[in-house]
Length: 334
Image (tube, rainbow, N blue to C red):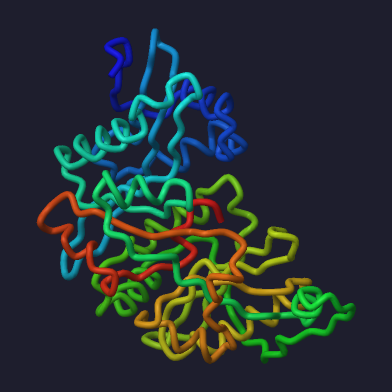
């Protein structure tokens, strides 16, 4: 262990952005405004970056996004580990573990209840080994082909025809989430044991506050207890035009709204739609009714694992896989 390496918590700064750029981290493309949006959580119990410096030069970092989280009938704070990097000259000194442990210890002392995230194949052994996270396996991918071109291309064949032909429903696209979203989330999450809160305040920050907020499609349909909300985004990734369903929640109107939104994306040229949803989630039947199927791990373009570690007695609910509700809204990269 090098005595000249200093580790501490820091807030977002030009120096952190410069380190992101020097390390070649993808989030650097968002710039200073994007870094502030990602990490400037009003509910954060402590600064989001655990940083290693040698002679004032940043040689490693562990970055975390704080958010309110539902833990049974209570609400707490969860810190999602999203970016970790150690410069080449500092590797082999257990700096990755020191940074992750340093943040978790400080976050627990400051009142954070859970640390969690989505380690890739390379990082998974560290998070699920010495860092003590519960390993919940890979995220629950669902897929819905929207155009036969996707399937035909996989089979090495030409051709294209649209597969999503649902009926369009009348929906509204709010410019701000309000009390109706609070009510929708309260009803939808009543039996969810653990989830990042998706009320109006959280969605206004996550969607409308994003530097790329204009790329999201927001659709709300129905009234009262039947009201439903679908948030999606069309993007070119993995060699396909993909409709990502970030969130789909609500009452009886959810099935028709989801089918209508898939129709919209198919008409816009999307070849497939992707979503994250566990089989025990309250919206799973709506996804299946709209034609989504579990995506086998062997067909996935990337390996995304999921795990968590409690930092408080209240956070123990997060260490049970079947308590969790996930959607693509939890992915910091969509």
